[in-house]
Image (cartoon, rainbow, N blue to C red; front, side, top):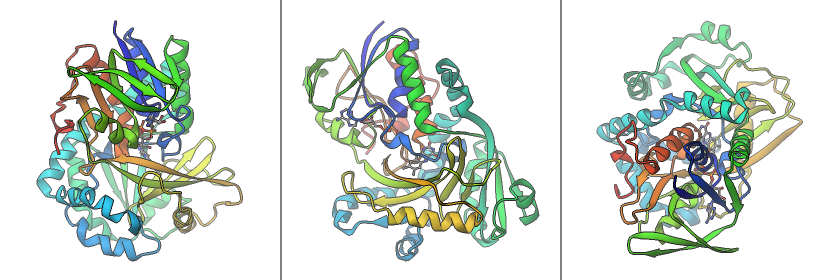
Length: 411
Ligand SMILES: Cc1cc2nc3c(=O)[nH]c(=O)nc-3n(C[C@H](O)[C@H](O)[C@H](O)COP(=O)(O)OP(=O)(O)OC[C@H]3O[C@@H](n4cnc5c(N)ncnc54)[C@H](O)[C@@H]3O)c2cc1C
C-alpha cells in the first residue's frame, strides 16, 4: 500500500483515484476547482475509439486559411495569442506527416480501445452504470467529395479495427430520420459508446472514491518542493502538503506544474464550446458528427448537446460566446426542428499536445512522480484507460500497452 497524491479532479484524475483506491492505496486528490467542473464538465460525451487519429493530418495546412476565414468555421485564433501559440502550432503542423500520424494512431488506438469496458467497470463500482451507453454514431458528409478527402483518416481507423458501414441518403434516413436531408453520405461507426452526462459521471466516481475512504481537498497547488530527484511537498493556497508519490492530472494546467518539476511540455488550451438544449423536442437514437463543421451532437439525459470548435486564445482569456452561436447555426442546419428556447452554454479548455498524444507514464527527473495529462480531444475516452495504466505503474505492474510514444521528454 502506498500513499499517493493526485493533482486534478477532472475525469482523468478521478478515474485514476478510483483505480488506485481499489488497489488499496491511500489516495488524496487535490483540486483547484470543484470536482468535475473544469474541462470534464461539458464535453460531447463520446467514448469513440474511432477518434484514434491525431488532429494534425496531411493536408491540414492547406485547410487552415478556409477554416480561419469562414465565420462558421471550426477554428479561430485570437491574434493577440498567436505569438505565444506559434511554437505549438509549428510542432502541430510538423506532426502532420503520414508516418507520424500512423504511429500516433497506433498509440492512441492502443490507449483508448478499452474505453467503454473501463467505464462500464468504473460506473458499476460507483452505481451509475446508466450513464454509459454502447452505441454506434454517424459521421455525416454534405458531399461525397468531402468524404473521399477523408479517405486516409478512415483507412487508418479501419486498419486499427474500427468497424464502419457507408450509408447513402436513404440509409441515413433509415437510421436517423430526424437529420435534415442535407447529407450525401455518412459513415456509421459501429461498436462505440457515449456518456449521457459527463459531469455526473466524474462526480459519481468521486463520490464512490470518497465513500471508499479516498480524500478530496479543494486547494490550488502553487509550488512544488523538489529535492534529490523526488517531489517532497506541495505548497498550496491553504498551506503545505507532504507527498510520497505524486500523480499530475491537472488538464491544461499540467504544463505549469511540470515546469515546477523541471520538465516543461508544450501544451495549449484548445478551447471548445457547447450548447445544451434542455427541452429540445428531439430524440436521437445515437450521436452524430458533421465532419465538415466538426461538431458533435449527442443525446444526453439533460437534453441534446452540440459541441465543437477549436479556439486558440490561451488559458485565461474570457469565453467568446460567438463561437457557441456558430454551433447553434450548425445545429439548426442539422436539426431545423430543434426547440431552442431552453439552453445552456459553456466553454472548456482541452489540454492539447501538438501530436495529439497525452503525456502518460513516469517522470524522467523525479522518481516518485507520474504523469497523466494532455489528452486534448480524447480526455473522456482516455480518462479511465489512463487511470488503469497509472494504477499499474504505481503498483509496480507492467502496463498492457507500450508507453514510449507518451513519454514526457518526447519533444
Ligand atoms: C467542447 C468539447 C468537447 C469535447 N468532447 C469530448 C468527447 O466527446 N470525448 C472525449 O474523450 N473528450 C472530449 N473533450 C475533451 C475532454 O473533455 C478533455 O480532454 C478532458 O475533460 C480533460 O480532462 P482532465 O481530467 O485532463 O482535465 P480537467 O477536467 O480540465 O481537470 C483538470 C483538473 O486539474 C485541476 N487543477 C489544475 N491546476 C491545478 C492546480 N494548480 N492545483 C490544483 N488543481 C489544479 C483543476 O482544478 C481540475 O480539477 C471535449 C472537450 C471540449 C472542450
